[in-house]
Length: 102
Image (tube, rainbow, N blue to C red):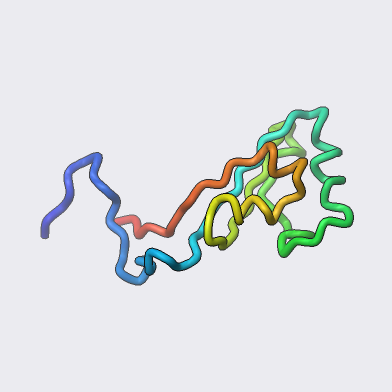
């Protein structure tokens, strides 16, 4: 069986391949300071979003002020629109896909 050399694209199953115009998966990575933590959570009040009342992964309790969401969107910009502006301004949208590990 052929194995790609180190540094090449990862092995990705055919089940995970997508049409180029299909929605993509994004991880929204938010980093905020200790002094911004309360405002980051308060920004959701009154903001309509499919992410409202979700339970993102968070390090805030341990003074590691970062949040992560997994979302589906057509673009990084659209993914960020699911966040309140205060949160989106401190968030990076990273396009991802599932990869099968050997």
